[in-house]
Length: 201
Length: 201
DNA sequence: ATTTTATTTAACCATTTGGTTAACAAAAGT
DNA sequence: ACTTTTGTTAACCAAATGGTTAAATAAAAT
Image (cartoon, rainbow over all chains, first blue to last red; front, top):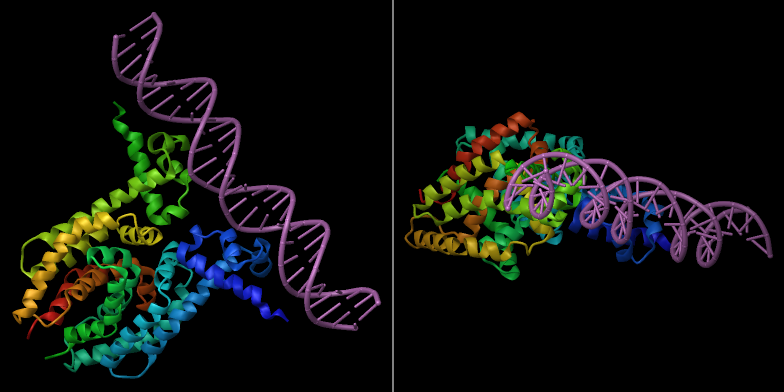
């Protein structure tokens, strides 16, 4: 029964267009063209641009959030956690390179979309991870550091190079291929860097 | 002679609207309303939305670029350079909190706008800074590190927390005021963190 | 086979949007 | 005083855009 092939093609095309152009820059006609169908079909399956956008956005979150939750929640030594995060997340983003910019852009456009979702998704895991870091500081296992700052550092160094690719490529004078190699190397570099920063010698 | 008060009001309003909504989300009518003038004046002074946008974008770059150039070019010890960058840049962005997201968003929309400008602006300074880092590694003054990765780390940790504010606020469960304090603390935290990561004990 | 339901299309519609115009007002030259 | 230039406005326009509709076609159900 045609197994919703059209609906699927629409979502693919919409993902492509929304992620590269954002909600405001996206055009329903372009999505229809890319899906190879009539514009009316978009509304038949998704009712409105807003609804279609939400479907795309939810999918985007569904790709990015689980890995973050998994790593943040897993019971394991902090250094392993850091290595798993940088390696896992940089790999993930490499496969979906438009996602971080898209999510950040849309979240800045409307900061409320996910407030509650995020709080519930990560609130708990974050608390545990904060306790873990505080405990290690107290035990003298790592240098004194505010858990929030450490977490910010991990996330920033993992994600920013994707978001600011055009700027960093210019500042560092790299072509696409070289920049790609730098990103690849970051899977381990970032973790090493962080661990060097916090470990007691 | 009326000293272009209107033109000035237009640019202010345009800056406000473009920086919060981006090129695609901005509306000429909203800019006119915010400037308290007739929409036709926008075209009288700036000819088109594109031209007005370019004026705003150039101003944005003019705010962000000089400090980066100054720091990157100044002849001083690496650790001072790092401290000056994180402190100076985080302060600067705090006064223009919409700028990084705006610039990144628009640069991703059209990566070519600044390619050459950036190359010429920073190419030279980057080369020198790279040499400086390589020399220190060779002399055993800091741990081995690829200069590109170090520079990426500095920039990422300084700027990303502004760009991803909505996400990080949720992940870290902070309200605006607390988040603002975290950012403030980063002026010194980021530099300390980096220096700990690379200095030989 | 026939009725009903789901899918698809082309044409259409109302609104929004960037941009223009013609007329008017205020300064500036002369 | 008057002519020209500059600044400003309201009304207007064409194109683009999200969304609708009515009719046609295909698939399922009876």
